[in-house]
Amino acid sequence: MNKASKIIAPALSLLLLNLPLFARTALEQAGTPAPAEDFSLPAPQAEYPGQPPSAVTAQQKLALFDYNKADALSFTRLPGAARENYFVEDLELRVADATASGGGYIQKYTYYRTYLPGPRPTVIIPMHFMGQKSVSDWAAMYFAKNGYNAVLIIPQGSLTDKTRPLIKMNELLQQEVVAGRMCVDLLETFPEADREKLYAFGISMGAIRAVLLFGVEQRIKKAGEIAGGGDLPGIVADTQFNALEKVRNARMKAEGLATIEDFRAYVTGVMKFDPLDFGCLRAPEDLIMVMGNNDNFVPDLYQEKLYAAFSRPGEGRYPSVVRTGQGHLITSFQFRKHIDRFIKFFEGR
Image (tube, rainbow, N blue to C red):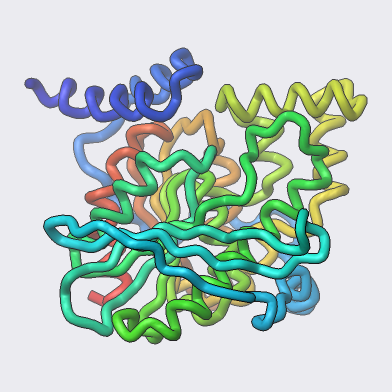
C-alpha cells in the first residue's frame, strides 16, 4: 500500500463506520492536501474577535452548571469484560431530576480501566457527534493501552434530534457538563484513579464538549482536543456536516427562520453559554489543541476562536497547538499520534 493509500484508507473506514450519509463532504475532507508532517506553533495567529468574555461573566455563567451531589441517588458498576491491556465495564449513576420522567434518569458511562497498578492518570471523554461509539471508544482503548483509565460520558440525547427546539440545546449540553462533573466525583472515590491527574479529551463535537467541561470544572487539570471549536451558533450555521445541516434546516423550518443569518442571530440569542465563555478561567498552558485546515465540519474560523479565547496575548501565554494541514476527518482519525502527544503534555514532558 502506498503512502497516499495509507492516509485515505483510514478516513474512508471512518466514513463507512460512522458517517454513512455524508459521502460528498467526507470525501472532500479526505482529499484535502496536507504536508507530510504535522507542525506545531507556539502561539495563535489571530486575536479574539471583539471583546473576549470577562472573568466576571464567566463566573456568573458557572452557576448554570451547579448541581447537588445528593442528587446522585445510587451507583452501579455492571459486570465487565477483561481485555489484553485493560478492563471495560459500564457504570450507571441514578440521578434525581424533578423534570425527568419518574423523577430521575440514569446517567451511563463506559469505563476503560488500565491493568497498570494505580493510582493512574484518568481521562474523561465526552462522545463525538452522535453518541455512537467507534472513534471515541477507540480513543479510550488507546489511552487504556497506554496506562490511563478512560471514562466515556454517554449522552442523554442526540444533537441529531430534529424535534428538539433550538433553545433546548442549552439543557442537553448543561446536562452533559453535569454528567462530567459527577464523573469527577465518582473518580475521586476510585482507588485506581489519581485525583490529581484528571484530564479531559475529545474529538470533533466531543472536543467542543470536552473544552466546555474543562472550562467549568477546575478539578480537571488539563485538556486535549482534536478538531473542536467555539461559537456554537456559528459552527451550526456554517457547518457542512450533513447530519447537522439537516437538523439546522429542519429547525429553521419549524421555528420560522428564513435564512442562515436569521438562524445564527436566533441561536446566538437563545444560547446561554459557549466554550468560549470559560477560556479566561483556565491557564492557557493547560490546554493542547489539534487544529485542521479547510475544515468543512468545524470551520477553521471557529477553531481559531476557541484558540484565541484561551490565549493571553498581553502576557505572551497561549495553549499548545498542533496544526495538521489536513481536513476534519483525517485530523480526527489520526487520534493515536495526537494522543501520544497529549500524554506527554499531560505528564509535563
